[in-house]
Image (cartoon, rainbow, N blue to C red; front, side, top):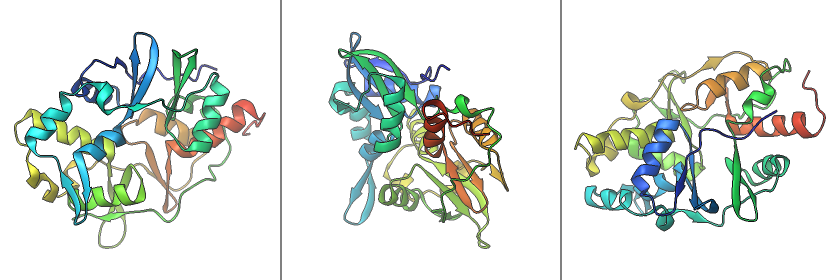
Length: 263
């Protein structure tokens, strides 16, 4: 089965960061692969960009001023990428590295030449036909209240190293979910409308959040299909817990390379 990713953009080291952000948003991808010619040179993740826009300071979270954000987007990919990323020479090795290193994408290379990429999303179709019960659910969920600000949610994402935060009402019921992808898309939209400034930190996060997917129970196949069809969300609320694309990696590895039939 083909499990290489067709959505992650591949851009040149000389291309602008702004183009990388645009392509990630268009493709609903969390990474950009950076090359010189056909040779892999680095990787940029949405988290890397978020940590450059939302700055961790002693008082909590700050945000780049307008001029500094424009300067960041005008820089070359080579200036902000992570050089010498984790790589593999086979699909099996890439999936194993994703599982063991907890990374969302691993390039496949041969003598530095990029052959493809394995990502959290690209492995999901390998599980579509599995009738097995979904057993790996993260509990308790890390949540925020509906009236949280952008600053408060970014503090949670930064401190807990997560990309998605469900929002709960006064009764503790999940009503919305905010993702790092949504946050960066919103920033770029504000920038395009000339309405970006440091006060966005104090904006309520609820209006830019999205509806969650909530299920009482799921098979592995059903969960992988829902995650695949909703890449900008990348999470399902299940039985008071949360399941993300990353939780699917070990299932896929067992099925593809350990002979597990998953039902």
